[in-house]
Length: 41
Image 1: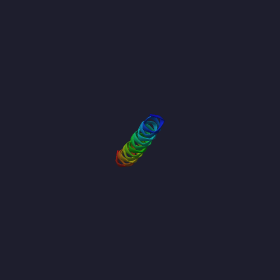
Image 2: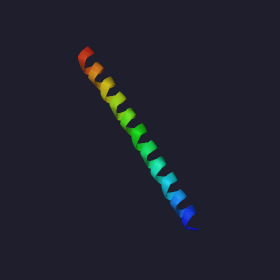
Image 3: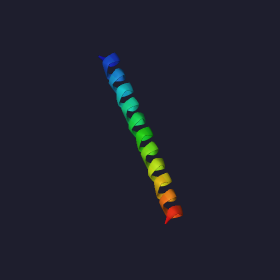
Image 4: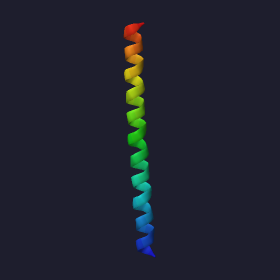
């Protein structure tokens, strides 16, 4: 029982870390796009 709970916690942490990394990539890419737009404009 304890092993399954710990496994679920590890999976949740992995999912959260994965989602945060994706959010960081998206925000950084959008920041680059906005910077290039401001330079062109």
